[in-house]
Length: 163
Image (cartoon, rainbow, N blue to C red; front, side, top):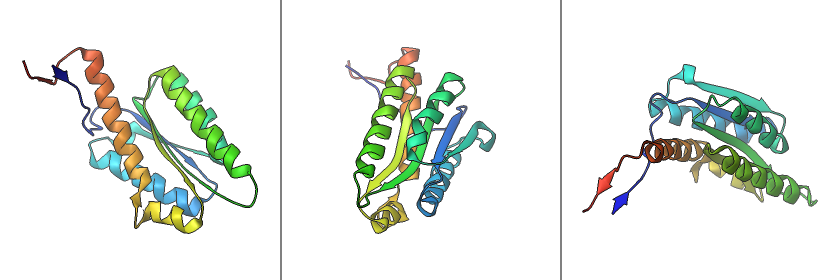
């Protein structure tokens, strides 16, 4: 039985990191974490583009435009939607997440999901370099692993053959 698993490598790959400016005290550390992860895992700084959008609602349209170019092996999104007193949170968080999922399927390009959806600012801070790590880093790691897995699956080579 063949088993396939991607490794987190940025060598020879192009990435886009799309960050939301809303809640920038949270999103800037997420973007910084994603960039640090990509470079530490072999991506050249010249092979990573950073795109800023106003808020989480705009993430899917920017990602769609980037995917249309066919330049990227993976995209990483970084944003933060923090629950407030109105249902606005539910619409923005849910619809942005759904749209990103659909884009990933439509284009066949991995999208690392670093869009925080938290109840409080403190929860978001804990996930943007605090007690719960940096979810921008984690999203970049997942994007690299999936880009590598897709390349491996497309090549038709077996990683491990137990027969």
